[in-house]
Amino acid sequence: MVNYYLKYKWSVAGNDPVKTTESIRTYETKSTFIHFRTTTSATLQIFTGMGIYEEYDYPYNPAGDYNNLGDFEKELEDLIPVNTNYTKHFTNTAPYILIKVLNTANTTTGQFNLMISNSQEKDFISASVRDSNLKLNSLVSLTRPTTDINLDILDGNITGFQNVVIKAKGSLTNNECLLMNSDIAFGYFDNTRLIRNLLFNSNQAIDTNAGNGARKILLNGLDINKKLAQVEGFTNGISNVALADSLIFVNSIEVSQAGIFGFNSGDIRVYNNGAVNIGNLLCSIEAGEGQSFNPQYEVPSAHTLYITSMSVFGNCVDDGFIKIVKYTYSSPNILYKVLDKFSVSPNMNYNRQINFTIQDGERIAIFRKSLATPQGNNDITISLYGTLKMTNLDIQSSI
Image 1 (cartoon, rainbow, N blue to C red):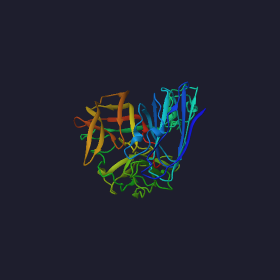
Image 2: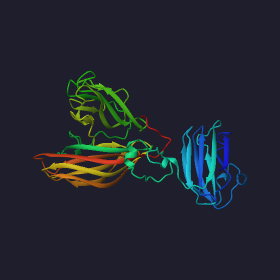
Image 3: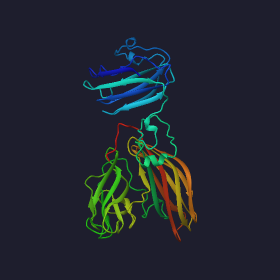
Image 4: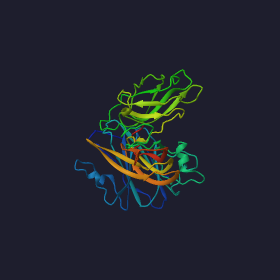
């Protein structure tokens, strides 16, 4: 049954910063539904308490009396995007609830609709049914019979989450380098966070927009606002191709269109600063592979990356080590932290659990080094498996 309904229009910006409901009785019921929609950006706060609060007890004034809610405690706060149907369903744990709506946009024209209802049902909602979509603010326990959460994420059933695999391969080198098929000391990394002047080429002439090999490539990375973004470009054989819509960082590249071969005939490499040299190499696709093995990944704005497992495969005849590093921007410098370091050995083939948290704007990278001049085969492939979680619904990707 509907216990409370409010349709409210903001009045004077700056003098109408918050609207607080009266306390709403919840006891003798098991759960509460909250439905909310706003025409401008607003913040919704949910409080629970033991006492009674009425709006006229604490009218608005510049001293901020509207913040005095007695014995009520804040249970939840969500930033609600514009024109989004927001629903929250939770089990009642206190006799009363009340809602505060903050005029986040500081508007004089926007309005919102709020409906609160109580139910004898517990916190079951249709989004908990197998194969249905889950939104980031869906209040359900992510346990579904016969369904793996990683499969739900792959199917796109849970918004705000995506699986991430960071793949790297290469051989041991005398210098400590990124684990890729080139000798790069650190990769291109700085604090300016500017759009890169990117270009790419292949070392085979048949990788052209009408050839038998790769005809178009797709770059996945971050735009100037550090949001997830994609850029495409047609190949032109061994000639350099400049990318007009550029990125501040490239996380991976892949062949998005090909001729009869179905893959890239040659090595395709993406460079920074408009210059083809090893120091500017950002990412590459080796011949015949169709996608990159890139030992670096930078987390986009309003996201967190949780890396939970790692697979290692290789056969190293020489002594050396692998090092996994996290970089954090701290202007004017960059903070460097080693997350893991382990020795290589012959016939490496194992998986193990790890627990790395990479925050918004941080980068993870995989390095390799030989302890002496390599004498034989030292090929290594490493994959890091994780989940990228959106931490702010109000910030969307550019994809």
